[in-house]
Image 1 (tube, rainbow, N blue to C red):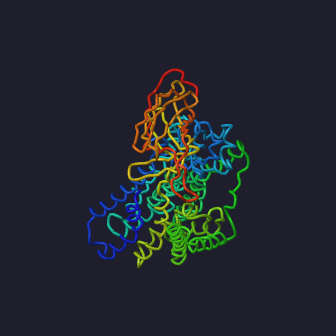
Image 2 (cartoon, rainbow, N blue to C red; image 1 turned 120 degrees about the horizontal axis):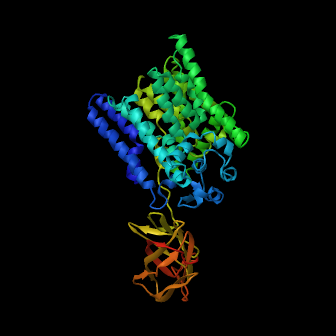
Length: 551
C-alpha cells in the first residue's frame, strides 16, 4: 500500500470529525456518506490486494515463522505457505484447522501451548468444515475468514453507529474498522475480529428481544475467544424492567457458556489441563502501567519515530476509552455494560498481552473500543471523544504495510504447480527501481528454486533473465544434473534462457560460476566484489506427467 493511501486512511477520524463539525452533521446527504464509506471499503480491499501473493496467496497473513514451520503439521509443509523469520499466533490456529478434533499426533509439538490455543476452536473448525475436511484446503480458507468478518462487521456497524445519518457516525465507523485491533486480527489471522462479530450479533439479538438467538451467538463468540465472557453483563436486560426477563436471560447465558465448558473438558481429556496462558494476567493495573512505561520509552528513543508515535497514540486511545466509560456511569445502557466488562478485563491483563509495540491488548479489548464509539455518539463534544478514542488507527495502518520479501526474485503459480526463485549464498541484496529488480553476485553464487507439484506429476521449469557484468567474462550456470547455460557476458545486457528442468516438489540449487575474479565496485575497504548482475528473472511452468528427474 502506498504511503499516500496510508496517510489518507490514518487521518480518517481527524478529517471526518472536522468535516462533521463544519457541516454540523446535516450539510451532506446520505449518498455522500455512503460514497465515503465505499471509499474506505475500497481502501481496505487495496490493503488486501497488497497482501496477496501469486504463489502463497493469503497464507502471507498467517505469519508462519521458520522455527514453527520446521515442526508444523504436514498440510502446512507440503503446500506453498509464506514463511517469515518470526511467527505469530495465526500459525498455530491454522494448524488446528487441519484437525479440530485435536487427535492429529503432530499437534502437540506443532502448536505452542496446544491446550490453551485449542479453547478458541470455532474459527479453525469453520475453516475445516468449509474445506470439506481436507486439511490443505482448510489452510487456504482459514486466512480468508477474518477478511470476510471485516466486511460483515462493516455492514453491521454502519446502522449501529448511525453512519447513514451523521458524519460523526462515519468517523466512528471508520475508526473501529481501521483500528489497530481490527486490522491486526486480519493481518495475522487471529480470533479477535470474528469474536467481536459474534458478540455484536448477540447484542443485536438481545436488543431485539430474541433471547434464544442471543444465547446462540454468544456461545459461538465464547468458542471463538473465551475472553468475551466479560461482556455477558451487556446481554442482560435491566433488572428493574423485568425480573422475569432477567432470570430468563441469565439462564440462557448460562446455557451459552455450557458448550465452552464441555469443550474445555474435551481438551483436558484429549490433551491435558489447560492453563490461563503464560503471563496473561497480573495484579490490577500492573500490566497497563508497564505498557505505558514501555511505550513512552520506545517513543522517546526515536529509533523508529513513526512507529513509536503511532504505538504511543494507540495506548493513549485505549486509556481514553477506559476513562470515558468509567467517568460516565450509565449501567442502564447496554453498551456501557459491555465497555465496563472490558475495563475490568483491562485492569487484570498481564504483561504478555500488553508488551510489544501496539500489543495484543488492542485486539483483546475491541469490545471496549466499539462500546466507547457507540456511547460517544450520544455525548456532548462527540467529535473530540471520537478523535481520542480512535487514536489506534495510525498503528493499525502501519501494521498493514506488506512485509518486503527481499530474498524473492520471481514467483509463479499454475494450478497445482508453483515455483519461487530466491537468492542464495554469494548474492548481494536485491535492488529495485520502479518495475526493475536485480541482484549482483560474487564469482560463485547460488539461486534457490523452490517447487511444489502434485503427487502424480512433476513440472518442467524454464528460467529466463538478463545478465551483464562490469567487464568481459564467461558465465556458467549449472545444477546437480549438469550444465544449463554457458556464455560470454559483458557490459551490455545478454538474454539468458536455461534449458527446461524436469523437477518435482522440493528445492533446486542453481550455481552461477565465473572463472574471472570479481571486480571491486569502488576503492573503499567495504566495497562489494561484483561478478554478474541478474535482472528481472522469470519462471515458466509446465506440468509434466510421469516421473521427474532427480535433483
